[in-house]
Image 1 (cartoon, rainbow over the protein chains, first blue to last red):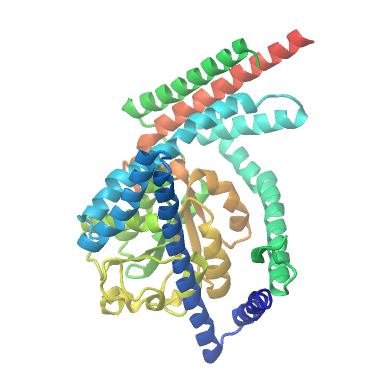
Image 2: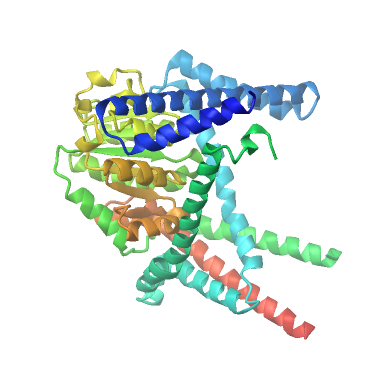
Length: 205
Length: 273
């Protein structure tokens, strides 16, 4: 029963959602949109599970004495933002919006900006002319880096066309091959889940 | 790795980090803006918006996190300002919780600057979880997924919400830093024939090129450079244009370290031989 029930649910809803994608009649559309409504509700509960799990992990760490200050700040932040939203709302001048714009967004942007430093350092070590393939990669990287900056137009007027060609042909064909692979993989995995062949989500190996 | 090699690697890293910092800082401080020539994608997005009939409605989706906001903000400002100046009505949503906070304040500010009325000329419906379910659900009606706007007003009470279906809007512009435009293409465009345009983080542009060549994505406005190009078409001085010198300086620095790195690599290889 423990396996039969989730496999049956996957089969029924998998086939149903697939069939409803192609159906436009009023009654079947109603069923489709009701299922979509439940999909969002289930997902919202998933978010709630994430928040509860996050707070319980951080609390456990505090009780074990593992970085109590940082974990305390995490819990405080996680509780503060929804509390502010409930007390003062989400209006442009609310405390929530102020905290979001002046604390959360700048902090996240700062951490993300560190990538520029690491990318530069990685480029220095990684882009080495070791063999024919890496020479091609290095040359393409140089063309794109020079051409995408405004200075590229002063160096050579043909950079834009060359970069567009790189994007339209070598880059797009490689990317399209990857996308087709992902698409086929998604279809295969979906069919395996719908027909109960893929059971790793039930804890099976 | 020997101690000397480790020390040398650390020294090189510090030099590179300092170089990046200096090149970006100097680029931001100098009062000079290099000119940019608009690319095909930028021109395509610009002409799409130029050709929208005033009074029409468009959907905008803020599908980005706050981490990428410095890059997304100039893009969003350029596109939203152009739409408001063209008297195009905007229904905005967010498929990311953080995008909701950022989109709400940006829309309010630009709406006030352009003397537009909230609820009549623009509206922000907020965030809903699960992007695919949200896009598909909006196929029934926007108010089905968003019965209330971001501020708690009933959407059916807002005049702008007379446009309540995909067929009532001219298209969707997704301002994104990740994979969400593909959801708009796979669900919005495929099922509801919605025209999808995208303002993307520079790192994501090549991922979406195949969709442009296949005609599934109308156009891409890419990164800070895209914002600067769009600002040049609008004849305004914005965040994208101001960042171009810093970006140029950083690019020159990276080209230099690539050349220096390869010269030192080739020399060390010769020594080994």
